Image (cartoon, rainbow, N blue to C red; front, side):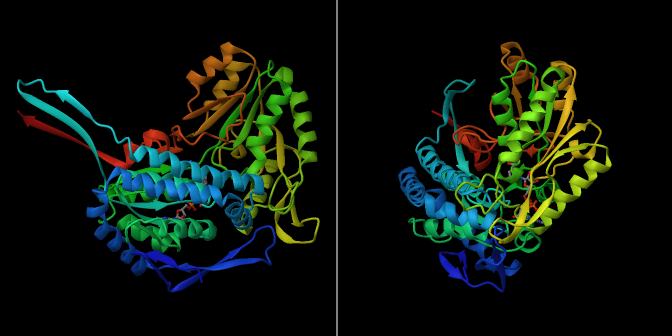
Length: 479
Ligand code: NAD
Protein backbone atom coordinates (compact mmCIF):
# COMPACT_ATOMS: atom_id res chain seq x y z
CA UNK A 1 0.00 0.00 0.00
CA UNK A 2 1.19 3.55 -0.79
CA UNK A 3 1.21 5.22 2.62
CA UNK A 4 0.49 8.69 3.94
CA UNK A 5 3.34 11.01 4.91
CA UNK A 6 2.98 12.39 8.42
CA UNK A 7 5.75 14.09 10.39
CA UNK A 8 8.35 12.79 7.96
CA UNK A 9 7.23 9.13 8.31
CA UNK A 10 5.28 6.95 5.89
CA UNK A 11 2.30 5.64 7.85
CA UNK A 12 -0.40 3.06 7.17
CA UNK A 13 -4.00 4.20 7.18
CA UNK A 14 -7.14 2.52 8.46
CA UNK A 15 -8.52 2.09 4.91
CA UNK A 16 -7.48 1.55 1.30
CA UNK A 17 -8.38 3.34 -1.96
CA UNK A 18 -8.02 1.35 -5.18
CA UNK A 19 -6.64 3.46 -8.03
CA UNK A 20 -8.16 2.24 -11.32
CA UNK A 21 -7.08 3.11 -14.87
CA UNK A 22 -10.09 4.66 -16.68
CA UNK A 23 -8.62 3.58 -20.06
CA UNK A 24 -8.74 -0.06 -18.94
CA UNK A 25 -10.74 -0.75 -15.82
CA UNK A 26 -9.05 -4.15 -15.41
CA UNK A 27 -5.80 -2.31 -14.63
CA UNK A 28 -5.28 -1.65 -10.90
CA UNK A 29 -2.60 1.05 -10.58
CA UNK A 30 -2.17 0.55 -6.86
CA UNK A 31 -3.72 0.61 -3.42
CA UNK A 32 -3.40 3.88 -1.56
CA UNK A 33 -3.86 4.84 2.07
CA UNK A 34 -7.30 6.08 3.10
CA UNK A 35 -7.00 8.16 6.26
CA UNK A 36 -9.67 8.96 8.83
CA UNK A 37 -10.19 12.04 11.00
CA UNK A 38 -7.73 10.87 13.68
CA UNK A 39 -4.89 10.44 11.19
CA UNK A 40 -5.66 13.85 9.71
CA UNK A 41 -5.34 15.37 13.18
CA UNK A 42 -1.91 13.72 13.55
CA UNK A 43 -0.81 15.46 10.35
CA UNK A 44 -2.17 18.81 11.54
CA UNK A 45 -0.31 18.42 14.86
CA UNK A 46 2.94 17.63 13.00
CA UNK A 47 2.56 20.68 10.76
CA UNK A 48 1.79 22.92 13.70
CA UNK A 49 4.89 21.69 15.57
CA UNK A 50 7.09 22.27 12.51
CA UNK A 51 5.81 25.77 11.81
CA UNK A 52 7.87 27.95 14.24
CA UNK A 53 11.21 26.76 12.85
CA UNK A 54 10.14 26.59 9.19
CA UNK A 55 8.57 30.05 9.31
CA UNK A 56 12.04 31.38 10.20
CA UNK A 57 13.97 29.27 7.65
CA UNK A 58 16.18 31.25 5.30
CA UNK A 59 15.21 32.12 1.73
CA UNK A 60 18.28 30.15 0.59
CA UNK A 61 17.02 27.00 2.39
CA UNK A 62 13.59 27.31 0.78
CA UNK A 63 15.07 28.08 -2.63
CA UNK A 64 17.35 25.04 -2.54
CA UNK A 65 14.52 22.67 -1.59
CA UNK A 66 11.91 23.97 -4.06
CA UNK A 67 14.46 24.18 -6.87
CA UNK A 68 15.54 20.58 -6.27
CA UNK A 69 11.90 19.43 -6.25
CA UNK A 70 11.31 21.25 -9.55
CA UNK A 71 14.42 19.67 -11.08
CA UNK A 72 13.40 16.14 -10.11
CA UNK A 73 9.88 16.61 -11.46
CA UNK A 74 11.22 17.93 -14.77
CA UNK A 75 13.79 15.15 -15.05
CA UNK A 76 11.08 12.52 -14.49
CA UNK A 77 8.39 14.17 -16.63
CA UNK A 78 7.88 11.18 -18.95
CA UNK A 79 7.55 8.63 -16.15
CA UNK A 80 5.32 10.88 -14.00
CA UNK A 81 3.31 11.84 -17.09
CA UNK A 82 2.72 8.17 -17.82
CA UNK A 83 1.38 7.63 -14.29
CA UNK A 84 -0.82 10.71 -14.57
CA UNK A 85 -2.29 9.64 -17.93
CA UNK A 86 -2.86 6.17 -16.55
CA UNK A 87 -4.81 7.30 -13.48
CA UNK A 88 -6.62 10.39 -14.84
CA UNK A 89 -7.13 9.57 -18.52
CA UNK A 90 -5.73 12.68 -20.23
CA UNK A 91 -3.48 11.86 -23.17
CA UNK A 92 0.21 11.21 -22.65
CA UNK A 93 1.36 14.49 -24.27
CA UNK A 94 -1.14 16.42 -22.15
CA UNK A 95 -0.02 14.57 -19.01
CA UNK A 96 3.68 15.13 -19.68
CA UNK A 97 2.91 18.80 -20.30
CA UNK A 98 1.11 18.99 -16.97
CA UNK A 99 4.05 17.41 -15.15
CA UNK A 100 6.45 19.88 -16.78
CA UNK A 101 4.20 22.68 -15.66
CA UNK A 102 4.37 21.39 -12.08
CA UNK A 103 8.18 21.32 -12.26
CA UNK A 104 8.30 24.85 -13.63
CA UNK A 105 5.97 26.05 -10.88
CA UNK A 106 8.34 24.73 -8.19
CA UNK A 107 11.23 26.49 -9.96
CA UNK A 108 9.23 29.74 -10.15
CA UNK A 109 8.39 29.71 -6.45
CA UNK A 110 11.95 28.75 -5.55
CA UNK A 111 12.85 32.14 -7.07
CA UNK A 112 9.98 33.85 -5.26
CA UNK A 113 11.39 32.62 -1.93
CA UNK A 114 14.37 34.90 -2.65
CA UNK A 115 12.16 37.90 -3.47
CA UNK A 116 9.76 38.27 -0.54
CA UNK A 117 9.67 42.05 -0.89
CA UNK A 118 8.45 44.64 1.59
CA UNK A 119 8.27 48.41 1.89
CA UNK A 120 9.89 51.06 4.01
CA UNK A 121 7.91 54.31 4.18
CA UNK A 122 8.28 57.53 6.11
CA UNK A 123 5.56 58.00 8.70
CA UNK A 124 3.22 60.98 8.61
CA UNK A 125 4.60 61.66 12.12
CA UNK A 126 8.08 63.18 12.59
CA UNK A 127 10.89 60.83 13.56
CA UNK A 128 8.87 57.68 12.94
CA UNK A 129 9.59 54.99 10.34
CA UNK A 130 7.15 52.46 8.91
CA UNK A 131 8.04 48.98 7.63
CA UNK A 132 5.59 46.76 5.79
CA UNK A 133 6.59 43.09 5.71
CA UNK A 134 4.98 39.77 4.84
CA UNK A 135 4.91 36.76 7.15
CA UNK A 136 3.65 33.22 6.58
CA UNK A 137 0.07 32.53 7.71
CA UNK A 138 0.72 29.20 9.50
CA UNK A 139 -0.50 25.72 8.63
CA UNK A 140 -2.26 25.64 5.26
CA UNK A 141 -4.79 22.93 4.37
CA UNK A 142 -4.65 22.11 0.65
CA UNK A 143 -7.67 20.37 -0.96
CA UNK A 144 -7.45 19.55 -4.67
CA UNK A 145 -9.64 18.05 -7.43
CA UNK A 146 -8.86 15.12 -9.74
CA UNK A 147 -8.55 16.82 -13.11
CA UNK A 148 -5.01 18.25 -12.70
CA UNK A 149 -3.49 15.66 -10.35
CA UNK A 150 -0.02 17.23 -10.17
CA UNK A 151 -0.24 20.83 -11.47
CA UNK A 152 -2.91 22.05 -9.04
CA UNK A 153 -1.16 20.48 -6.01
CA UNK A 154 2.08 22.09 -7.26
CA UNK A 155 0.58 25.55 -7.62
CA UNK A 156 -0.66 25.39 -4.02
CA UNK A 157 2.17 23.49 -2.27
CA UNK A 158 5.06 25.43 -3.87
CA UNK A 159 3.93 28.93 -2.81
CA UNK A 160 2.79 27.68 0.61
CA UNK A 161 6.31 26.39 1.32
CA UNK A 162 8.11 29.25 -0.45
CA UNK A 163 6.52 31.81 1.89
CA UNK A 164 7.28 29.76 5.02
CA UNK A 165 4.02 27.91 5.72
CA UNK A 166 3.56 24.28 6.71
CA UNK A 167 1.21 22.08 4.70
CA UNK A 168 -1.36 19.33 5.11
CA UNK A 169 -2.21 18.18 1.58
CA UNK A 170 -5.40 16.25 0.82
CA UNK A 171 -5.57 15.17 -2.84
CA UNK A 172 -8.67 13.92 -4.68
CA UNK A 173 -9.39 10.25 -4.07
CA UNK A 174 -9.52 9.41 -7.79
CA UNK A 175 -5.88 10.36 -8.43
CA UNK A 176 -3.71 9.41 -5.44
CA UNK A 177 -0.82 8.20 -7.62
CA UNK A 178 0.44 11.60 -8.78
CA UNK A 179 -0.09 13.06 -5.30
CA UNK A 180 1.92 10.26 -3.73
CA UNK A 181 4.73 10.64 -6.28
CA UNK A 182 4.91 14.36 -5.55
CA UNK A 183 4.94 13.70 -1.79
CA UNK A 184 7.71 11.16 -2.29
CA UNK A 185 9.83 13.80 -4.05
CA UNK A 186 9.10 16.34 -1.31
CA UNK A 187 9.94 13.77 1.40
CA UNK A 188 13.48 13.44 -0.01
CA UNK A 189 14.03 17.15 -0.66
CA UNK A 190 15.52 18.17 2.69
CA UNK A 191 12.32 19.62 4.15
CA UNK A 192 12.31 19.35 7.96
CA UNK A 193 9.87 16.71 9.20
CA UNK A 194 6.28 17.84 9.57
CA UNK A 195 6.61 20.82 7.18
CA UNK A 196 4.81 18.90 4.43
CA UNK A 197 2.27 16.16 5.16
CA UNK A 198 0.24 14.03 2.73
CA UNK A 199 -3.13 12.74 3.92
CA UNK A 200 -4.96 10.74 1.25
CA UNK A 201 -8.57 9.91 2.04
CA UNK A 202 -12.20 10.94 1.57
CA UNK A 203 -13.41 14.54 1.57
CA UNK A 204 -16.03 13.73 4.17
CA UNK A 205 -13.32 12.64 6.65
CA UNK A 206 -9.96 14.17 5.78
CA UNK A 207 -11.30 17.29 4.06
CA UNK A 208 -13.94 17.99 6.69
CA UNK A 209 -11.37 17.61 9.49
CA UNK A 210 -9.11 20.19 7.86
CA UNK A 211 -12.00 22.63 7.51
CA UNK A 212 -12.99 22.44 11.16
CA UNK A 213 -9.60 22.32 12.92
CA UNK A 214 -8.59 25.60 14.53
CA UNK A 215 -4.89 24.78 14.00
CA UNK A 216 -5.36 25.18 10.22
CA UNK A 217 -4.89 28.89 9.55
CA UNK A 218 -5.91 28.86 5.89
CA UNK A 219 -7.61 26.56 3.40
CA UNK A 220 -6.92 26.65 -0.33
CA UNK A 221 -9.51 24.69 -2.29
CA UNK A 222 -10.07 23.81 -5.94
CA UNK A 223 -13.10 21.74 -6.86
CA UNK A 224 -16.83 21.93 -7.38
CA UNK A 225 -19.11 24.80 -6.39
CA UNK A 226 -21.02 22.60 -3.93
CA UNK A 227 -17.93 21.62 -1.96
CA UNK A 228 -16.55 25.16 -2.25
CA UNK A 229 -19.60 26.53 -0.47
CA UNK A 230 -19.02 24.07 2.39
CA UNK A 231 -15.41 25.18 2.62
CA UNK A 232 -16.50 28.81 2.77
CA UNK A 233 -19.12 28.20 5.46
CA UNK A 234 -16.72 26.21 7.65
CA UNK A 235 -13.93 28.77 7.31
CA UNK A 236 -16.17 31.75 8.01
CA UNK A 237 -17.53 30.02 11.11
CA UNK A 238 -14.05 29.96 12.65
CA UNK A 239 -12.63 33.02 10.86
CA UNK A 240 -10.00 31.08 8.89
CA UNK A 241 -8.56 32.48 5.69
CA UNK A 242 -9.75 30.72 2.54
CA UNK A 243 -9.45 30.73 -1.23
CA UNK A 244 -11.76 28.91 -3.66
CA UNK A 245 -11.35 27.99 -7.34
CA UNK A 246 -14.48 26.31 -8.67
CA UNK A 247 -16.49 25.67 -11.79
CA UNK A 248 -16.96 27.42 -15.09
CA UNK A 249 -19.30 27.63 -18.09
CA UNK A 250 -16.74 29.41 -20.18
CA UNK A 251 -17.78 31.13 -23.43
CA UNK A 252 -15.84 31.23 -26.70
CA UNK A 253 -17.12 33.86 -29.14
CA UNK A 254 -16.57 33.33 -32.87
CA UNK A 255 -17.18 36.46 -34.98
CA UNK A 256 -17.88 36.64 -38.71
CA UNK A 257 -14.42 38.11 -39.30
CA UNK A 258 -12.60 35.26 -37.51
CA UNK A 259 -10.00 33.12 -39.23
CA UNK A 260 -12.01 29.90 -39.53
CA UNK A 261 -9.02 27.64 -38.83
CA UNK A 262 -8.11 29.59 -35.69
CA UNK A 263 -11.71 29.58 -34.48
CA UNK A 264 -12.14 25.82 -34.98
CA UNK A 265 -8.84 25.12 -33.26
CA UNK A 266 -9.75 27.34 -30.28
CA UNK A 267 -13.18 25.75 -29.91
CA UNK A 268 -12.09 22.12 -30.33
CA UNK A 269 -8.93 22.50 -28.23
CA UNK A 270 -10.59 24.14 -25.27
CA UNK A 271 -13.95 22.40 -25.52
CA UNK A 272 -12.89 18.80 -25.98
CA UNK A 273 -9.22 18.20 -25.22
CA UNK A 274 -8.41 16.69 -21.83
CA UNK A 275 -11.84 15.09 -22.44
CA UNK A 276 -13.46 18.45 -21.60
CA UNK A 277 -12.46 17.96 -17.98
CA UNK A 278 -10.94 21.38 -17.44
CA UNK A 279 -12.41 24.21 -15.38
CA UNK A 280 -11.28 26.53 -18.20
CA UNK A 281 -12.92 24.46 -20.97
CA UNK A 282 -15.12 26.51 -23.28
CA UNK A 283 -18.38 24.62 -23.18
CA UNK A 284 -20.45 27.40 -24.80
CA UNK A 285 -19.47 28.58 -28.26
CA UNK A 286 -21.28 31.74 -29.33
CA UNK A 287 -21.15 32.19 -33.09
CA UNK A 288 -22.37 35.11 -35.20
CA UNK A 289 -24.73 34.49 -38.12
CA UNK A 290 -22.35 35.00 -41.05
CA UNK A 291 -19.90 32.26 -40.04
CA UNK A 292 -22.20 29.96 -38.06
CA UNK A 293 -22.89 27.22 -40.61
CA UNK A 294 -19.32 27.08 -41.96
CA UNK A 295 -17.97 26.97 -38.41
CA UNK A 296 -20.30 24.16 -37.27
CA UNK A 297 -19.52 22.10 -40.38
CA UNK A 298 -15.77 22.51 -39.81
CA UNK A 299 -16.02 21.58 -36.11
CA UNK A 300 -18.05 18.45 -36.92
CA UNK A 301 -15.49 17.46 -39.54
CA UNK A 302 -12.70 17.95 -37.01
CA UNK A 303 -14.55 15.92 -34.35
CA UNK A 304 -14.98 13.05 -36.82
CA UNK A 305 -11.19 12.91 -37.19
CA UNK A 306 -10.46 12.75 -33.43
CA UNK A 307 -9.41 9.38 -32.08
CA UNK A 308 -10.97 8.39 -28.74
CA UNK A 309 -8.74 5.73 -27.23
CA UNK A 310 -6.41 4.66 -24.40
CA UNK A 311 -4.85 7.79 -22.92
CA UNK A 312 -1.34 6.37 -23.23
CA UNK A 313 -1.57 5.14 -26.81
CA UNK A 314 0.28 7.12 -29.49
CA UNK A 315 -2.18 9.00 -31.70
CA UNK A 316 -4.99 9.24 -29.15
CA UNK A 317 -6.67 12.66 -29.23
CA UNK A 318 -9.19 12.12 -26.45
CA UNK A 319 -8.73 9.75 -23.54
CA UNK A 320 -11.55 8.32 -21.46
CA UNK A 321 -13.73 10.18 -18.97
CA UNK A 322 -12.28 9.90 -15.47
CA UNK A 323 -14.79 7.47 -13.93
CA UNK A 324 -18.25 5.90 -14.19
CA UNK A 325 -20.08 8.64 -12.33
CA UNK A 326 -18.58 11.45 -14.47
CA UNK A 327 -19.52 9.45 -17.60
CA UNK A 328 -23.07 9.06 -16.28
CA UNK A 329 -23.21 12.82 -15.64
CA UNK A 330 -22.05 13.59 -19.20
CA UNK A 331 -24.65 11.24 -20.70
CA UNK A 332 -27.33 12.72 -18.46
CA UNK A 333 -26.57 16.20 -19.83
CA UNK A 334 -26.70 14.87 -23.41
CA UNK A 335 -30.24 13.70 -22.66
CA UNK A 336 -31.13 16.98 -20.92
CA UNK A 337 -29.96 18.99 -23.94
CA UNK A 338 -31.92 16.79 -26.34
CA UNK A 339 -34.99 17.12 -24.14
CA UNK A 340 -34.59 20.90 -24.24
CA UNK A 341 -34.74 20.85 -28.05
CA UNK A 342 -31.04 21.19 -28.87
CA UNK A 343 -29.79 19.44 -32.03
CA UNK A 344 -27.10 16.82 -31.48
CA UNK A 345 -24.79 17.59 -34.39
CA UNK A 346 -22.19 14.98 -33.45
CA UNK A 347 -21.39 12.20 -30.97
CA UNK A 348 -22.63 12.07 -27.40
CA UNK A 349 -22.67 8.31 -26.96
CA UNK A 350 -20.67 6.10 -24.61
CA UNK A 351 -18.22 3.57 -26.06
CA UNK A 352 -17.79 0.60 -23.75
CA UNK A 353 -14.47 -0.48 -25.22
CA UNK A 354 -11.64 1.04 -27.20
CA UNK A 355 -10.48 -0.43 -30.53
CA UNK A 356 -8.45 -3.07 -28.66
CA UNK A 357 -11.39 -4.22 -26.58
CA UNK A 358 -10.20 -2.59 -23.34
CA UNK A 359 -13.16 -1.78 -21.08
CA UNK A 360 -13.05 1.91 -20.16
CA UNK A 361 -15.09 5.07 -19.69
CA UNK A 362 -14.93 6.16 -23.32
CA UNK A 363 -17.29 8.67 -24.88
CA UNK A 364 -17.61 10.24 -28.30
CA UNK A 365 -17.40 14.05 -27.96
CA UNK A 366 -20.80 15.75 -28.19
CA UNK A 367 -21.60 18.93 -30.12
CA UNK A 368 -25.02 20.57 -29.76
CA UNK A 369 -26.36 23.27 -32.08
CA UNK A 370 -29.58 25.32 -31.97
CA UNK A 371 -29.16 25.92 -28.26
CA UNK A 372 -30.43 28.99 -26.45
CA UNK A 373 -29.45 30.92 -23.35
CA UNK A 374 -32.14 29.59 -21.02
CA UNK A 375 -31.26 25.90 -21.53
CA UNK A 376 -29.65 23.96 -18.69
CA UNK A 377 -26.93 22.82 -21.10
CA UNK A 378 -25.86 26.49 -21.26
CA UNK A 379 -26.19 27.18 -17.54
CA UNK A 380 -24.65 24.21 -15.73
CA UNK A 381 -21.11 22.85 -15.82
CA UNK A 382 -21.02 19.34 -17.36
CA UNK A 383 -17.25 18.80 -16.98
CA UNK A 384 -17.03 16.48 -19.97
CA UNK A 385 -16.57 16.59 -23.77
CA UNK A 386 -19.94 18.27 -24.32
CA UNK A 387 -20.12 21.65 -26.11
CA UNK A 388 -23.11 23.71 -27.15
CA UNK A 389 -23.29 26.32 -29.91
CA UNK A 390 -25.39 29.46 -29.52
CA UNK A 391 -26.23 31.71 -32.46
CA UNK A 392 -25.78 35.49 -32.09
CA UNK A 393 -26.86 38.32 -34.42
CA UNK A 394 -23.74 40.40 -33.86
CA UNK A 395 -20.85 41.13 -31.48
CA UNK A 396 -23.02 42.99 -28.97
CA UNK A 397 -25.40 40.08 -28.59
CA UNK A 398 -22.49 37.65 -28.42
CA UNK A 399 -20.89 39.66 -25.60
CA UNK A 400 -24.19 39.73 -23.72
CA UNK A 401 -24.57 35.94 -24.04
CA UNK A 402 -20.95 35.39 -23.00
CA UNK A 403 -21.45 37.32 -19.77
CA UNK A 404 -24.91 35.88 -19.11
CA UNK A 405 -23.70 33.24 -16.64
CA UNK A 406 -23.18 32.95 -12.90
CA UNK A 407 -19.58 31.87 -13.61
CA UNK A 408 -16.59 34.00 -14.61
CA UNK A 409 -13.43 31.95 -14.95
CA UNK A 410 -12.23 32.19 -18.57
CA UNK A 411 -13.61 33.61 -21.83
CA UNK A 412 -12.34 33.69 -25.39
CA UNK A 413 -12.94 35.40 -28.69
CA UNK A 414 -11.87 34.48 -32.22
CA UNK A 415 -11.75 37.63 -34.35
CA UNK A 416 -9.47 39.62 -36.67
CA UNK A 417 -11.01 42.88 -35.46
CA UNK A 418 -8.78 44.87 -33.12
CA UNK A 419 -11.81 46.89 -32.10
CA UNK A 420 -13.80 43.86 -30.97
CA UNK A 421 -10.81 42.13 -29.38
CA UNK A 422 -10.00 45.26 -27.38
CA UNK A 423 -13.61 45.79 -26.35
CA UNK A 424 -13.95 42.14 -25.31
CA UNK A 425 -10.83 42.19 -23.14
CA UNK A 426 -12.30 45.09 -21.18
CA UNK A 427 -15.94 44.01 -21.04
CA UNK A 428 -15.74 40.26 -20.53
CA UNK A 429 -16.75 39.43 -16.97
CA UNK A 430 -14.16 36.65 -16.65
CA UNK A 431 -10.89 36.53 -14.73
CA UNK A 432 -8.94 35.29 -17.76
CA UNK A 433 -9.58 36.44 -21.34
CA UNK A 434 -8.09 34.93 -24.50
CA UNK A 435 -8.00 36.44 -27.99
CA UNK A 436 -7.52 33.92 -30.82
CA UNK A 437 -6.39 31.35 -28.25
CA UNK A 438 -8.18 28.48 -26.51
CA UNK A 439 -9.66 29.37 -23.10
CA UNK A 440 -7.74 26.45 -21.59
CA UNK A 441 -3.95 26.53 -21.50
CA UNK A 442 -2.39 29.24 -19.36
CA UNK A 443 1.09 30.33 -18.34
CA UNK A 444 2.53 29.29 -14.97
CA UNK A 445 4.06 32.62 -13.93
CA UNK A 446 0.99 34.88 -14.01
CA UNK A 447 -2.23 35.01 -11.96
CA UNK A 448 -4.91 32.38 -12.46
CA UNK A 449 -8.50 32.70 -11.28
CA UNK A 450 -11.97 33.96 -11.98
CA UNK A 451 -14.85 36.15 -10.91
CA UNK A 452 -18.48 35.74 -9.89
CA UNK A 453 -19.37 32.15 -8.92
CA UNK A 454 -16.07 30.67 -10.20
CA UNK A 455 -13.63 31.94 -7.61
CA UNK A 456 -13.40 33.52 -4.20
CA UNK A 457 -10.46 35.19 -2.54
CA UNK A 458 -7.02 36.17 -3.84
CA UNK A 459 -5.66 34.89 -7.15
CA UNK A 460 -3.43 31.83 -7.40
CA UNK A 461 -0.06 31.57 -9.18
CA UNK A 462 2.55 34.08 -10.18
CA UNK A 463 3.62 36.60 -7.57
CA UNK A 464 -0.05 37.28 -6.80
CA UNK A 465 0.01 34.02 -4.81
CA UNK A 466 1.68 35.95 -1.97
CA UNK A 467 -1.67 37.57 -1.15
CA UNK A 468 -3.05 34.29 0.10
CA UNK A 469 0.04 32.59 1.53
CA UNK A 470 1.28 35.56 3.56
CA UNK A 471 -0.13 38.06 5.99
CA UNK A 472 1.01 41.68 6.04
CA UNK A 473 2.60 43.33 9.10
CA UNK A 474 2.99 47.08 9.49
CA UNK A 475 5.68 48.02 12.04
CA UNK A 476 6.32 51.56 13.39
CA UNK A 477 9.65 52.65 14.92
CA UNK A 478 10.37 55.91 16.76
CA UNK A 479 13.98 56.65 15.93
P1 NAD B 1 -15.08 18.07 -5.65
O1 NAD B 1 -15.62 19.34 -5.10
O2 NAD B 1 -15.94 16.88 -5.65
O3 NAD B 1 -13.77 17.64 -4.84
C1 NAD B 1 -12.68 18.53 -4.68
C2 NAD B 1 -11.93 18.12 -3.42
O4 NAD B 1 -12.74 18.40 -2.28
C3 NAD B 1 -11.58 16.64 -3.35
O5 NAD B 1 -10.29 16.48 -2.82
C4 NAD B 1 -12.63 16.11 -2.41
O6 NAD B 1 -12.26 14.93 -1.76
C5 NAD B 1 -12.78 17.26 -1.45
N1 NAD B 1 -14.02 17.24 -0.65
C6 NAD B 1 -15.19 16.66 -0.96
N2 NAD B 1 -16.08 16.83 0.03
C7 NAD B 1 -15.46 17.57 0.98
C8 NAD B 1 -15.87 18.09 2.25
N3 NAD B 1 -17.09 17.89 2.74
N4 NAD B 1 -14.99 18.81 2.94
C9 NAD B 1 -13.75 19.04 2.46
N5 NAD B 1 -13.30 18.56 1.29
C10 NAD B 1 -14.15 17.84 0.54
O7 NAD B 1 -14.53 18.40 -7.11
P2 NAD B 1 -13.92 17.38 -8.18
O8 NAD B 1 -15.04 16.55 -8.73
O9 NAD B 1 -12.73 16.68 -7.62
O10 NAD B 1 -13.38 18.36 -9.30
C11 NAD B 1 -14.17 18.84 -10.34
C12 NAD B 1 -14.55 20.29 -10.10
O11 NAD B 1 -13.38 21.05 -9.88
C13 NAD B 1 -15.23 20.94 -11.28
O12 NAD B 1 -16.35 21.68 -10.84
C14 NAD B 1 -14.18 21.88 -11.84
O13 NAD B 1 -14.68 23.01 -12.53
C15 NAD B 1 -13.45 22.27 -10.62
N6 NAD B 1 -12.11 22.76 -10.94
C16 NAD B 1 -11.88 24.10 -10.84
C17 NAD B 1 -10.64 24.63 -11.15
C18 NAD B 1 -10.38 26.09 -11.03
O14 NAD B 1 -9.23 26.48 -10.91
N7 NAD B 1 -11.39 26.94 -11.05
C19 NAD B 1 -9.62 23.78 -11.56
C20 NAD B 1 -9.88 22.42 -11.67
C21 NAD B 1 -11.14 21.92 -11.34
